[in-house]
Image 1 (cartoon, rainbow, N blue to C red):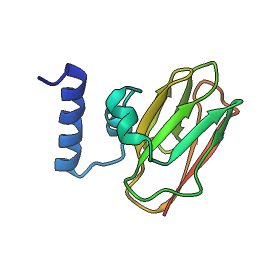
Image 2 (cartoon, rainbow, N blue to C red):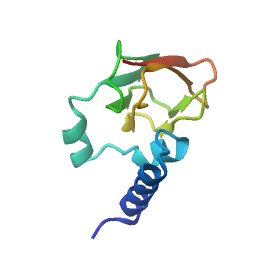
Image 3 (spheres, rainbow, N blue to C red):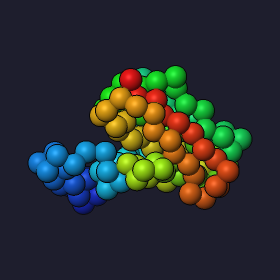
Image 4 (cartoon, rainbow, N blue to C red):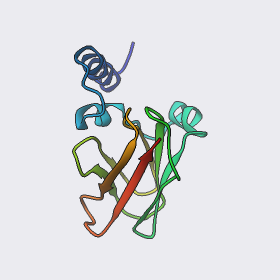
Length: 125
């Protein structure tokens, strides 16, 4: 039987697909997954945003709708928060989360809500 968290995520994702709302903060949060056996196996080859020394290191580009790993190498929690409200993921120290890239090509700026000097860009092409 699915866990409550997984079931809630599936319900939100299903509602997003039914209503055509994809890439919102709610769906990005619901689709983000903590590091775990299945998450690691599924995302080892996914493009990654690395966080180290209070800086974002992004891939050159990702495909629309791609799973993007966010790996926090710092000793503190960070967020990856879209400037336009498309995604908002909290990544504890030393952990990994995933998001789904927006489905439209473009450059998406983001920041850390905790450390306001941290900014990055995700290029979708």
